[in-house]
Image 1 (tube, helix red, strand yellow):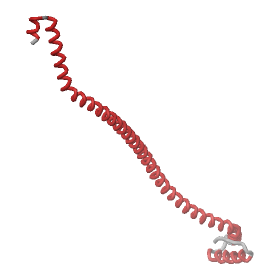
Image 2 (cartoon, one colour):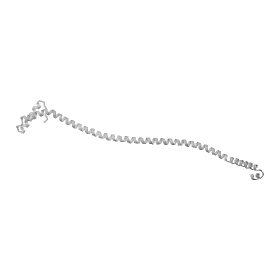
Image 3 (cartoon, rainbow, N blue to C red):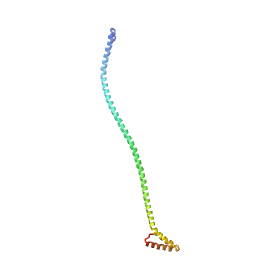
Image 4 (cartoon, rainbow, N blue to C red):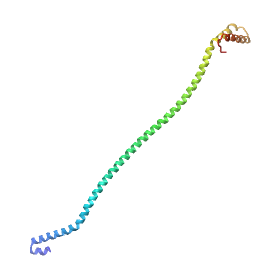
Length: 168
């Protein structure tokens, strides 16, 4: 139709084209308006969902950070546990050695105590033993062995009579 109007007037042809374009625009606008409303609604829903997604993403990130912290803490505690277990094992080993040493020292103390008491007994009898040996050396050199034994026995009785201890 604009071609027929153009035969009569060019300005009317331009106006006809313009009116037809506005009419086409109005028809398209009417058909697109519900779609635009759906688009706005979808964009609004998308914005809400994106907000919820960001919140969930933040929550997941916080949870992952917490998990990493717990894993780090667990790893550190496992290391400390291993160190404590190694210390306990070393302490038990040392305790066993200390018990063996204590037992050995106790036995050695008993031996030394016994030896000391024997030495003390010998020391107490040293004076009497010296008297008996001196009598044997002075009076018994020229005699027979049996005679010397008899004299030593009699001298021991004499030493006992005075309350002097002897060892033989």
